[in-house]
Image 1: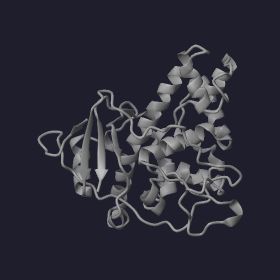
Image 2: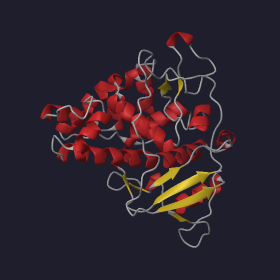
Image 3: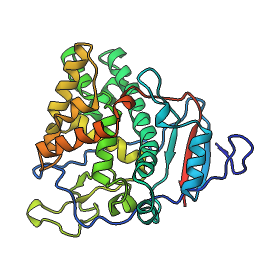
Image 4: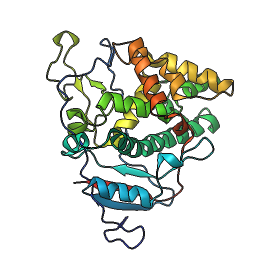
Length: 321
């Protein structure tokens, strides 16, 4: 691993003071009758870059973060339907000053900072899922690699279970990527643009519930729903990974998976706007929640990000002090 702290070219000592403080109540964003925080058995804390190199940067100001994005030529203005390359960036979490700082920023700038930090995480998580999907498509039915994924996605109960082509097809319905525009819209909605105390204290960007007793307790917990809390994560990337695993495995989102598979079979575009129409179970608001997600995707022009791809370069990990 390489560490860079000066600044000749891509050697930075940039510093971010990001984000966040307090949301006093939990959103009604999960069905009460089942655990929403389904997590991969062993979520990756951080994705390796293709070159197996990593630049580590420490960030302390919004101005320096913006300067980093400019040096990387990273802007949504450069994202079109034909070309939308996004750098490989992860970050360690939200800074305590973000809520106060973000209140002073123009809304457009605040949103762009949020989207530009979160979009690479979504693409990295999708890349990991695509790698699994390739294994599912190409492996022999008795291969250890295929059985490992089938166990992870709860399609079999043990390595002694036999797989057939029908089970492979069921697995492919689960092991599939999610449109970045949907993930970004939900992250913004569920974290209040990364200003919730759950995002600050536990890297919780999607409001996933945890019934293990280890979750972050909402200030106004509804006792009738059990001993729930909001799931905490080791990193923002882990939060994205768990969100995708949840949508890909939880029975509440079977409509999403069925529509995605139907569109893929028909060789039609799989869009965040389209899949958002299946998300009535994510929130007790039902159709109003769907309408809000679709409005956010449309108003913030997130559709082009569904065609985005990661730059084939080193990973840049930003540490927020």
